[in-house]
Length: 283
Image (cartoon, rainbow, N blue to C red; front, side, top):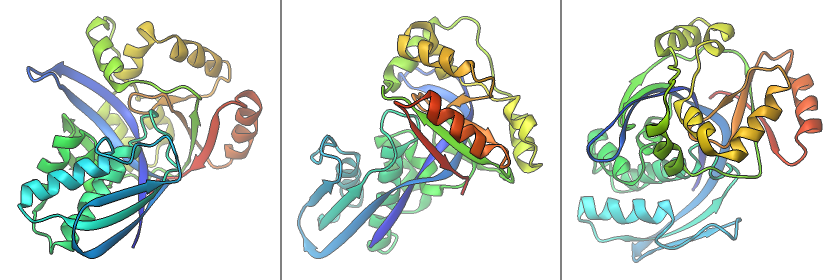
């Protein structure tokens, strides 16, 4: 079977506190977008192991891959003897971008494993397995617009009626999520996203209301020390277009009213020849 494994963006990201276990308590909006990887999954109908191949040579295909971690954790949780499964992973979502590509792969694979085994795990159990591997995986188990709290496991459905295009700007460099969270302790002048106003703006199809209330504390943290982010943000600010970082970056995005999209794309492709410029939509 072929599974479409889509990305997400964050429309506002607040860090509320650092928890005793080292994680951070968050309050944010996550919405799925059309940029996606593809996974060809073959259940071989006999017991065995997981084999992963990919179109990207640099992607690890052993125990370091999130698909393998999900595979191992699922069979540990269910106490079923592991199936022989082959996965070909076609990566289109950039890594180290804040778009949730790996978590999306893991979440969609976890759902397929559960489906193959006649839904042996309920939603709560799936979330428990998912969050033990990655904080964004519970979101992709739902894959609908959500207000996300806790460390990523508390999901509240919201309406997204925003009728606009999403333009992604992914620079050549990546960003370490760990570095972004580590720098949060040094952040003094925190700017909070107004999550309630973003939610109402999404429901009311009010692009200005959404855009005017987005803040991202991980970006604020990175701007303390990350010279790549500092210089890239300065360059993009010269465009006088509202832009935002997704997650821990390094990908930025523009929420474009549809009549402006083509002119934005032309400008961005001229100014950022070393970046991936991707037009996509909400799903």
